Image (cartoon, rainbow over all chains, first blue to last red; front, top):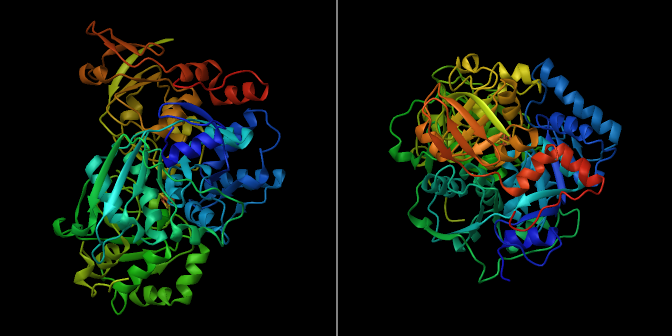
Length: 426
Length: 173
Ligand code: SF4
C-alpha cells in the first residue's frame, strides 16, 4: 500500500507493514525529552507509574531552556527536582545552563534526532525536527512519562496535507514568511490533528535553518507534525552529527493526501502576524505605522545562525532607536560561538543590543524582557497570544529576523529594505 | 458517566497561555495554578467558577503549548467537564491523561448561554440543557479513549501494559 512519509515512519515503528490515517498505533520511540518546565511533572507521573528505570538512559534527555539561569526561588526548586532525578538515575544527556540551549535547536545539533525517527518531547515545538525527515511531535508531561517508562507511545495516524512551494524567493523573504503565510491561509486550526508535509523546488533553495523554522511552526496551524523528505542538503547536515544509524523514508509517488496545496513563493513579501494570533498574517508593508518598544531576535523558531546573519546585515552601521530596546539570544552555545567568530555579536553590541545566554528568553513572558502594559514587541518567535510576552495589554508582532532588526533601528514596524540594501542572490 | 453543572461560556481558540500564563509555571500545585487560571482572558473568571461547573467553548480549545499545567489549573478550579466544538491535539491528550473530562459538541456551543445548567454524558457525548430542556448530540467518546479512561488514564495504562494486560490499540479505534 502506498504511504506518505509520516505513515511510513509510524508503520515502521509499530512493526506493521502499513498504516492509514485514523489508525491507532503503539509506536516505538527513538528519543524522548523534557525541559525544565515540563520535566518535573513528567518525573512526578513517571514515579506514579511504579517504574524503576527509564526505558533506555541513552534515549532520554533533559534540557533546561525556559527559566534558566533560574529566575526565582520557585523556578530553582523546579529545576532541582530534575537535577536530583538525573543524578539518581545517572542519566547521561542532561543539559544545564552553560552547556544548554533551546531544546529544539540543541538536540538536533547534538545529533539526537535523525531521519526516520519517532521523536517525542514534552514541548509543543518538538515538531521542529520534521525538517530532518523525522516524525517529531509534542506531548504533555504524562505522555512523556509513559514514553520514558515504556519506550513506546500510542499515536493516531494523522491525515497528511502536502504543501508544495514553487518559484524563487525574493530578497528578505524567508522560511518564516512561508510558514506564516500558510498559517494565515489555513488558520490556527487548519491542520488540526494532521501532518503537514512540505515539498517543492522552492524548499530546496532554503537553508536547513529556514526549513526548521517551517516545521517548527506546524503546531501553530494545529498540526501533529510537520515533515520534509530529507534531500542531499539535509543528509549532509545530519551526517557529521548523527549519534545512531538512521533510515531515510520518502513518500510514495502515489501516496494519498487529504489535500495538496501549491504556493508560488515568487510573489511573497516579508510578512508579520499581528496580535493576538499567528494566523493574523499580512505583508509588513501593509501593517501600517506601529511604534515598537522592544524587538527580540531568538527562539527555537528564529534564533539560528542564518537569522543572526540576517539581523546583523540590517543592523551593521546602525544604532537601535533610542526609544526601542533590542534583545538578541542565540539559540544554542554553538550558534553563539559561531556568531562570535563571524563578528555578529560585535555588530549587535555596537548597535546597542543586549545579547544574552542561550535560552528561550522573553518568548514566554516569564523573565528576561517581559513587556509592560501597552508595550509593543516585534519578535522572531512563534506565538503572539494575549499575555504571551508579558502584560495582557502588551502586543506582539511575529516576523523574520530582518524585519525585527529593521524595527529595532527605526523604532517602528518596517521592511528591512528601509534600512539596508537587499542581500544578493545566494 | 454523567456530570451536572453551571455553564461558563468562552470563545474560539482559547490558548494555553491564557489558561495559565507561563509566568506561573514555577509550580505544579493545582490550587496555586487555579488562582491564575484564565487570568489574562478575564481576571475575575476564576472567582466565578465554582466546583462542578462546566466550561463551554468554541473551536480548538487549548491551542498552543504542551504545558500540562493548563488542564491541571482547570481541574484545580474544580471544573467538572469542558464541552467544546473541538480541542487542540496536545490538550486533548493531556486532558484524558489527567482525567479531566472533555466532550466535543458543536451544538452546545451554539445554544448554551452563561449560567445554563447542563448535564453532560461523557461516553455518548450527549449534553442536556436543564435550563432550556434542549438536548445536543455530541461526539461519542472514541473506543480507545474509553479504554484509556477505564484503565485510569495514562498512569493506569502504563501500569497495565507493564503487567502484560491488554490495553493495546486497535486499527481504526
Ligand atoms: S523559544 Fe519559545 S516557543 Fe521555543 S521552546 Fe522556548 S518558549 Fe517554546
